[in-house]
Length: 332
Image 1 (cartoon, rainbow, N blue to C red):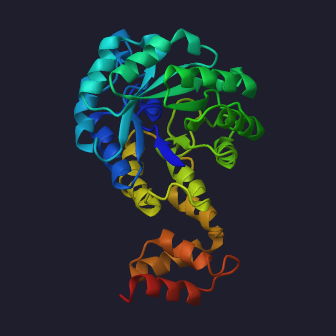
Image 2 (image 1 turned 135 degrees about the horizontal axis):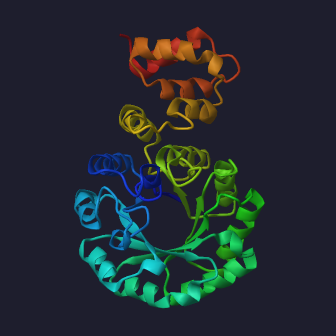
Image 3 (image 1 turned 90 degrees about the vertical axis):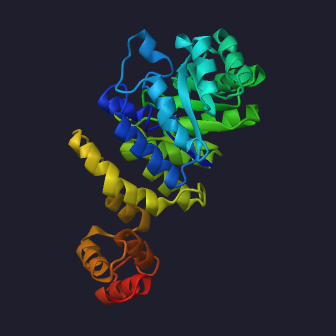
């Protein structure tokens, strides 16, 4: 299973239709340096949206330029709302070296857009396809739609919980139905309006999903998306998404992205340190002792918490914490 980060597209909704150039470059660098291998970026409304009045701080042409240094480091592509399709935009994206376009249309409307899928494929791009508002169809209907889309040449399907209304059993049944019906990869895109993005992601993984959509710090439209860092934590517990440098990604968030987003008025719902407490099973009552030891021995407190918790999650002693810190970092 892979992580598909959508911060630079869906997450851009927190600032309007896009992040400014400096943030776009920072996020591309942070993701690629830490092994996130599939990235969707661009105007929040998709490729060509600016031509229809959905202006953002960065144009499609600027996005292509910003992506150029990172194209060999990850699969980088854009979202294409099928209703906003223009052939020249698809050709331009291909000429600029993008890896994929993800065509998006409401579930049940696949038969309206074979020409869009064909244009993407004819230009040598991978064609991903988002079944937006997937909850409009039953699992059996989704499976039938999936067969149609596979026949059109789509390379991957995403079940998109656009309103964040799906329950874990619905997610599981939908993923299972599509996995049985088609042989192309299946992804899941979960919004958090019911506070179920992580539970739905877990259900999707249990059903064999191939990709999880997510956004750094949970950034996305409305109530937000599954945070990329939580997706990596959940995947890591299952031995999945090993290509991602989990601690490197958390350190990038702490040192760069969170301070920068604070200047834009955005605060993460769960900090990297809070995430690590849940990931490791460490009670927050021990946090000050961990932080003091990490400072004294110059080690990453997050790694220290995880290492000690592998030994004692109930009541780790200061001696154990300090001895483990010494082993991780050596004496000061």
